[in-house]
Image (cartoon, rainbow, N blue to C red):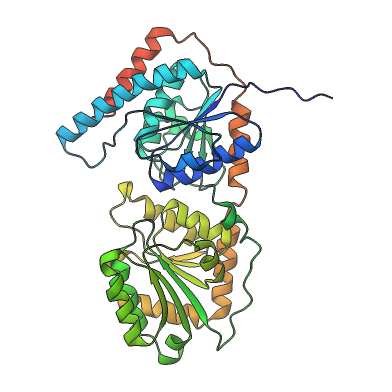
Length: 393
């Protein structure tokens, strides 16, 4: 039987320029392109990473601005930018006539999703965190489906809970390849690879906390460590010097361009709990001591960390109540108990969703067949413009 051809019009992927939104959006775009779909990206001025998707991705930029945490005047300016972006997105949607739009959160996705919804285009939202982000909360009533990365997601309205579909958070292919790289049991005298990362921007607290904790370890345990640690530019030399004084084998850099290899070797991670970090850790099956960034909007990193800890794949150390002694005690306990470490690794692996990008692409394609309607007319467009203005409130 001959397969039915799908609509050749594009699927729009709308995402902000920050890494947490870029990585899963880029993964989805690549997956859809591989399936023969036409894909176009709509982003703000920061969204440069998408230019690298095989040269096959049309990239469009519109105006957008974040609102959370800003003063009254800045919010007003951001509202104007969002409104102008909405009218830019309307023109773009009218010209491209997409079969679906996928929003990945961040305020850069708001104008495009609102403009597409006003024309009856199916809307799929993707939420990377265990708390529905503010942009996705605004857009949820217009969504056909909301793809989520955790089984339980906070701040979802009762009317929208029926739209939730668990897909997981897409990760890079190099991380998915680690899925079967299960480490053998840790021998009593074997070297121990410890990986310390602070997300894309590093983490100042780790530059002080981790070396102090390592200094408190028993000599025999400290001698076994092989440390990889991310540090910010102004803190790098101090961290290197601290480990040199301790006689610890440490590779300290601002950025690791071989993260999959380091993750493959790691017995334990000390890290933040951003969405991409926990997704990669769990897909790879690596246990972690998670220290959530305490100033994240809606404290979503703590929610992410709690979800992985509840699954048994991590321990949560709140930054405000953790010191070098607390961290050292956990390192001594875990690194001195290979069975407990292996159990955590297995639990982390069980919590991972290696086929998240395929699940998400399947969901998008299920909703991409309906042609955009025209019954909404000018009234719906006006209502959507009003919603864009309300985002500044």
